[in-house]
Amino acid sequence: MTEIQPRVFPADFLWGAATSSYQIEGAAREDGRTPSIWDTFSHTPGKVLGGDTGDVAVDHYHRFRDDIELMHGLGLRSYRFSVSWSRVQPTGRGPAVQRGLDFYRELVDGLLEKGIAPCLTLFHWDLPQELEDAGGWPARETAERFADYALLVGEALGDRVGMWATHNEPFCASFLGYGSGVHAPGRTEPESVLKAAHHLNLSHGLAVKALRTVLPRGAQIGITWNPVVARPYSDSPEDADAARRIDALQTRIFSDPVLHGAYPEDLKRDTARVSDWSFVQDGDEATIHQPLDWVGINYYTPAVVSAAQDGDPTEGADGHGQSEHSPWVGSHDLVRFHNVPGERTEMGWLIDPTGLTELLLRYSREAPGLPLYITENGGAFEDKADEAGMVQDSDRIAYLHGHLGAVHTAIEQGADVRGYFLWSLLDNFEWAYGYSKRFGMVHVDFETLKRTPKASAHWYSEVIAAGQLPA
Ligand code: GCO
Image (cartoon, rainbow, N blue to C red; front, side, top):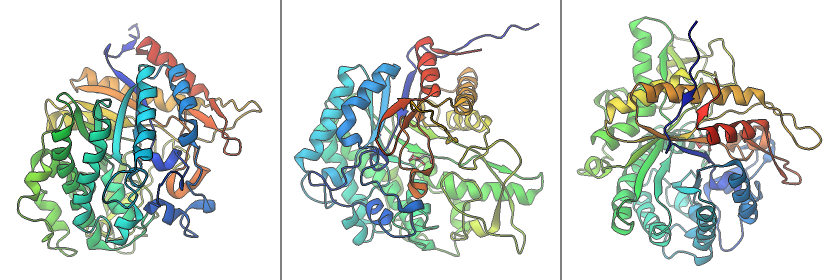
């Protein structure tokens, strides 16, 4: 009989949890904050389930000290959050609002006091509405404004934040925001998607350059992607090609210019009907190709794809590469996403931890020497709170156990994985799904805003303390 060995993680492994500004902060109109595209979108009837908005969210803006206590109680070593651009630079241009910067300074100081390392993301989709009115991400100027904003935040917080990310999932910001339109700003313009993707990439390069001028040496700058794990439905060459197309369109469109300094040729070919890519100017790819200190991977589920047959139905839409895309950019109408049998989360996403191992090994081969983090992983489940607000979420525990096991496997096989951020610390505003989907390890009563750690939070806390997975 083989004995089951405990799966031990490296001693300095960074155990964390993640959130984002619009999903938790609330205080949408306080202290000089102006609307972002998500304020506008959520207030547009029909865009978000139940008409939910982030006006109050889980009121983290006022309760951040309690939330830090909560993190400390659970033993988190790191906290990944994002800055609301329109809170620190209301019009997306010009000087910063001191009160906005002070909020993040107080948050960071509170974390540091408890020994929790802050990991700051500059952009998690809440573009100032004024910049959208001027064209949004399809407009090149937005990339320049983003670099200015990065500089303001870098100057203000560089002395206390060690880990920086430019973007979170630029795929969602471009493809869901300007293609399928299921996310803010809700536009459905095929060529704008590609322009948005390019300007997000460009803004990343410009922001990294700007941050390097103000951050202390040793600051760790990276970016977070949600690369698709595209699996062919059958062994046919047509299905392999469908997987290639989706990989180019959803993953390599971001990772190739950043890691290798050039857009993939197959992507340009596949999308030639939509655009000639003349929006890529000389020198842009070199600007995007900045040296990085880490890369963050968000993983939830794989995608199973085949070549579309005439008459295939076009399926619905959301963020993580499942059957989600109406035909808008060159490839998506040639590819069919399949719902293969298997266990799923409340989002309908197939549970398959092997995809996470696969991605980590992929990037360790593709970018040798670049430290990797899982910047998001987690699941929405049908959490039922008892009267005390306690949730016995054994399905979430199983999900986390499986995926942390997959991380461990990748490390064993040589991937340089430095940390894991569970999505999410708190139940929160799940974008187009409003408050109907709960991803938190901490339950939030959306009426009273009371926080109660779920069973999964206690489980995770024990994993952190032990530095290993239970057998
Ligand atoms: C995402 C986002 C999160 C989502 C989570 C679940 O990066 O897609 O970062 O904001 O809430 O992924 O859909």
